[in-house]
Amino acid sequence: LFGGGWNRSSEASEGSSAFSKAKKDGVDPRVTDVDRWEAESVRDPRFVLSVQWKPVGLTVLQLLEAELKYHGVRNPDSATELANLLLSSRNGRKGGP
Image 1 (tube, helix red, strand yellow):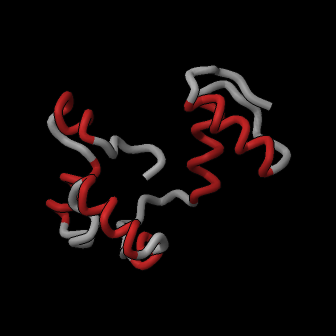
Image 2: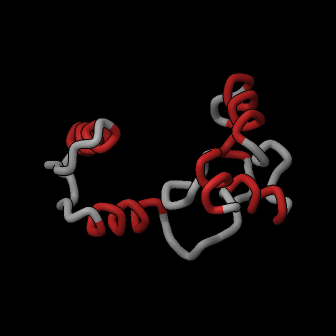
């Protein structure tokens, strides 16, 4: 989820998004396109916790640490620092704690 192309732009520019892969792999009928994901999230914001995701050999912590390292940012010391880092990256600023 965190490291994949999950939106329509990936589908259009690369020909494959995480949604199309999930549909092809039959992961869960609720995880097949952006509109369905959105509708399911409105119905049950925690539905993703019941999806039988395919194992990738990484924990969420390992993935986050790899992403931070890739972007040249040290591991944050608190949830507040992590939130600030994520918000600044969404606004196009590189940097962090």
